[in-house]
Amino acid sequence: MIITKMALPRRTFLRGVGATLALPLLDGMVPALSAMRNTAARPTSRLHVAYVPNGIIMDKWTPAYEGTDFALPQTLTPLQPFKDRVTVVSGLASAPMFPLPGEGTGDHVRAAAAFLTGVHPKKTEGPDIRGGTSMDQIAAAKIGQETQLTSLELALDPNELIGACEAGWSCAYANTLSWRNPTTPLPMENQPRAVFERLFGDTDDTSQAARLVRIQEDKSILDSLVHEVDSFRSTLAPADRDKVNQYLDAIRDIERRIQLAEAQSYIELPELSRPTGGIPDTFAEHARLMFDLQVLALQTDMTRVITFMMSREVSPRTYPELGIPDPHHGLSHHQNNPVQIEKLTKVNLHHMEQFAYFLERLESTPDGDGSLLDSMTMLYGSGISDSNQHLHVNLPVVLLGAKGGRHLRVKEETPLTNLQLSVLERAGVPTDQLGDSTGELKHLSDV
Image (tube, rainbow, N blue to C red; front, side, top):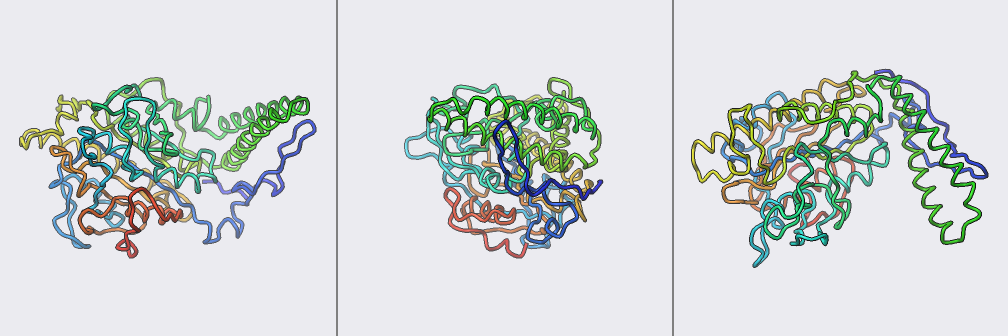
């Protein structure tokens, strides 16, 4: 990595004809080697959430012993190289995922909608959906202001699901984990090329030269916008002038992002060509390409908050590469059939193997005096434990961070959101309340 002392001036202005707009202090205004940049009060905090659907074979997930003297069971074995960073948390539950009296089906959509919000979603098939603000977006509202993209919301399954995914429930609840506010679910992108272009623009690679060309093009477009807007603003009525001022606020945010991009353009990246259109043939190929893109997004500091839905609830995906032609959702209703249980265990393990690949990439990517993995707070889990019974108690959850190496069993039916409050605290975003939370998990203070 190349470290430069170049910095943007403290007083940076957006200039147009007759207009000069000052911008607030930005990360890019602080020299890379300055005392301010390296003070302990400004550590880089990054949050990652990975979700897997349709439940887990829990006896292949749950360690036999509590505390630090435990072995990782079959499904968690890919995490062995990172065991000292892993905390397996057992006993968590989510009351908002259970049905209200007379509500009937909907365990899968409620599992997704409530996983990061702790809020029971409104039952509807129409546009009047309602959930809660999700944990990742609470983090993005704070630490996301220091990066070009406040957050990334990604998935592996397609976005075509519309209408009702379970009787009476909108597919909007199953299509995402991320909610900006109770009425605004955020779309999740599954096309690698679209993710690449969002990160690096309409370029062919991640080389420094290509990134600088993109930045200069963005600056030219911005300068043109400012000139055009300011040239007619004085001729507008007061109400329209207010609208134009709001537009200029948006332009200022774009300027902030361009300045951050300039400051970050000196970071050397492994060269990755823009992916071709379409989706890779296998789940593993697709997952690893998306994980590679996430590493780049974190390495360039384009974002510090990523939510990744590795598959959707009620997903019909098959895994022929594993010798499993059965749809995932169908397998999850295994009726205690040993053959079906074995197949679902293979799927659970396959998901974890791809996640372990991501951890390997993070650990091998330098960041400051350590690696990207050193700055991560990560949550991996599902909103369903026993899929055959659609249980939302004893949820399968793993926390990864700088310290771990422990199997923690909390009091039965402790809200999942209590753990998430602790995760937000670790990520530098202390929060008093999240959904049905009753307080942070104090057990994690020494982990």
